[in-house]
Amino acid sequence: MADGGQNLGLTALGAATLADLPEGIARPNYDRSTLTAGIVHIGLGNFHRAHQAWYLHRLMQQGKALDWAIIGAGVRAADSAQRDRLLAQDCLTTLIELDPSGKSAEVSGAMIDFLPVQEGNAALIAQMADPAIRIVSLTVTEGGYFIDPATGGFDARHEDIQHDAAHPATPRTAFGAMIAALRLRRDAGTGPFTGQSCDNLQGNGDILRQTLVSLARLSDADLADWIAANCTFPNAMVDCIVPATGPSEIALARSFGIDDAAPVTHENFRQWVIEDAFCAGRPPWEEAGATMSNAVHEFEAMKLRVLNGGHQIIADPAEILGVETISGAMAHPLISALLHKVVRDEIAPHVADVPGMTALTYLDLIAGRFANPEIKDTTRRVAFDGSSRHPGFLLPSVRDGLAAGAPVSGLALVSALWARYCTGQREDGSTVAPNDPAWDDLQQVAIKAKATPLAWLEMRHIYGDLADAEAFADAFCGWLEMLHSEGVEAALTRYVQG
Image 1 (spheres, one colour):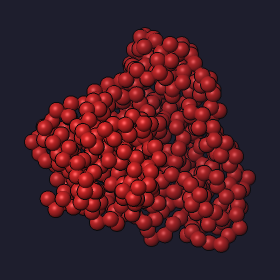
Image 2 (spheres, helix red, strand yellow):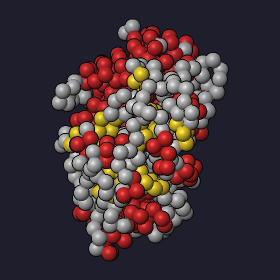
Image 3 (tube, rainbow, N blue to C red):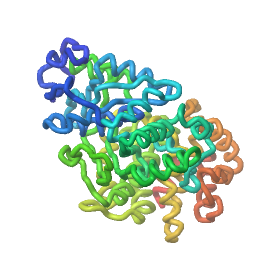
Image 4 (tube, rainbow, N blue to C red):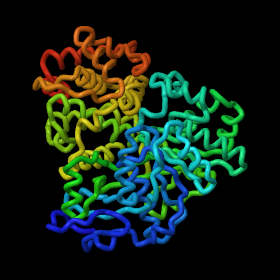
């Protein structure tokens, strides 16, 4: 690895130019032309390339897992642009580590192809039906699994799910494509594959199993039973802060002398805890630093409640106040104090310790990570899709607190801040551009809640019965009224000072 900021001539990233990269830039030491595919990954964004693909690259650097290379895939039209960028550079990625003590870069090469995005997903289905593919992994966002937020069960109402149930051979969703491929594998006798979710969901493997089996059952009960009996879906906890790529990240890659159309920046921390449940084999992930453990749920709960929940705690007030980055939010004394007090008083008491780490020690760790000034992670990115992230990361702590008769006022303030954010206007009068798949509906309810705060909690598909929980609902209504009448900093001051 090399330090950034050098005045170097640019080398266009590609297989033919790896030897021409500036001295000190780590690159694949394995012969990529001999790699064979073992994994199809659906939803190929920055997080995957900085996390799962990085672990696999690390194994390949050791001469291992050379038959486990990744083929990328997407099911959305927008994935075509990513495909074009990556194929133009032979699916290589520049990974830039943003350590406060100095940036460094390496080129990762575990991915070897990217399937075309097609209506009906024929190419994706055919690739997953290939018996050489033994793992199908996904990063499709927390909101992409068709979960009913109120019940946690499968939500079959979406029009894409209805389409896939009626037209299983030409599906629209990643899950429909997986089911179609598994049908071909069952009929050909080539066996199942492992479905491996890499999304930030507690019990992500269990949720993937629920989505796949439930969708299959809508069209073929026998196939659903076969999937349930033969496929495995390991739960996993994934962790690495990976900002979105924009012009500054591309410029940063160029400062290392690399012309990369899709570089990835990431923090100097990674964690991957995985259940060892792979029906068709797996790479030796642990030899690249992953932890194989039966205690995934405990690791997941701590990470999702404290880190992912913590992200939501700070992102909405920062956005309302016009603070653009997560490190900037941590530099704001009231927002930082909000994070520490809510986690310490209302989240950590309901989070079990894991080997070597308590919830409060973990809070100190993630607060330092959030404050890393080299990570230009935007509050807007973190605040995206609150309609999935609040139910997934914060409301379980509310329910635990209510069940224990413990304080929930700070968590009520966090929900009120989200409602205030969804009005679509910052305190300086600037407009918040839509930032949720359900933005129009959220904004309509948020505006109504200015006069009738309880209207926000009456979104039962998000909050379930929490509107009926007096301790939470009363605190929420009081905070939302204060946010609109006195502003964010007054409310934060009131809460932080107790």
